[in-house]
Length: 181
Ligand SMILES: [Mg+2]
Image (cartoon, rainbow, N blue to C red):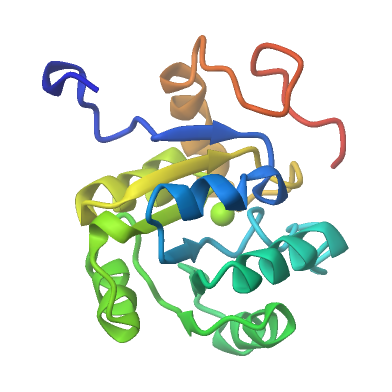
């Protein structure tokens, strides 16, 4: 990417859901750590249960020798810890994304540098901004459900502007959103 086109709100990749991220491509790109947002990236805000496809994708990630860690802004530590247990991932909660510090903490724990790290999330102004500030690569996914916190719904309005014309891998064409909710 030319330096002049750098935007802190631009993701490296856009994929419709986390389980469609190509694990072999991550291995080929030298990725050793994937930092995952929890809410509406791995755990839908409506069902609160990790879809089997997400668990299977995490198994493939582990099988490929790539570490994973939840990086969650959710301040309900018990719920976040339960999800981490369900997904088989360690967790850094109270992450305070878009601040990059929690990502750096997770990388330090895993002994991995930002050039070997990918941050995956469903929000531009928290997950993608945090990843870019941390110096990592980023993947923006579509939110798993339409249920969001009230302030997230406000941010979604700005996101819609930033994402104009962006196409997500795994979707036929255009930012049409998901039909579930
Ligand atoms: Mg989220």
